[in-house]
Length: 389
Image (cartoon, rainbow, N blue to C red; front, side):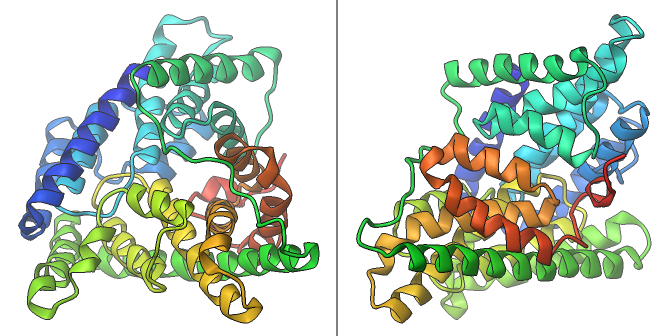
């Protein structure tokens, strides 16, 4: 799994670099979608295969086609190449499920239920540079605990091995240091800011998931997937294609995976107050249109940019330097938004510790609590809306 994650990362990052040099490729976004559709048909795959359906298949023990790994790899790169706002992490989950499902043919009957979740944990943990978060996320999003020692140890082993491979290859999610509040900020203000960030993340998750679902239903009503791809691609192309003419070129920065926005927000660099809305809009248009790619990294980017906006507002209210507040608030809002969009708060907290260190844990927990309860009725993944058995 580590090797497949490395290939996915290199391919998608290369596609993003090409688009950055040639933004006019956005006019071909619909064509990229049609090419992906044709690839799925050529591989005899239903185009409806996405992360949510993969989760449901793994949960019910159904087979995930092994060809899905190649299809999502190429299709994600095509989407990013043409300016679509998608990420690599959920694509890695689909690759893991497909390859894991294929591997069940060569293992004993007793081990088969553990293979696909272990492969998914390995793929996500390696791509996020957070192996523990990958393990916790798979169990939490499927709403089931390990049924045996093998179920518990298999994801841990595969996730650590895959993470080691990506580390050796130099593939990392981001280069982030621990984000902490300035020492002079009172404890009460720090607590209030974390809670406020969590409330913002929860409310934003309700709007984001609601908009994504509504636009997806509207485009699906057009009939065949190619119609949704055409409308979503044309809408995005018109929005971005006239950026030079109408002088809002900055909007193009919010295409692709969102890694640039995450790193800028965490570094305390200036981030426009509307950045989270721009990234959310482009992500909704891309995913609702049926373009292939992951939703996790764009979600993290939206959350990080939202945290930067919260820091700007807090700086005005408290009379503090917004740039000094931004790293922590971007970090905690990012994980809180992830928790509320996926209904997986424990995974979000583990991710926060692995990415930013234990110092951020209390503030991340304070943000995740209101975010989770505000948005617990919605999720990008239907399996995480159930109660634990």
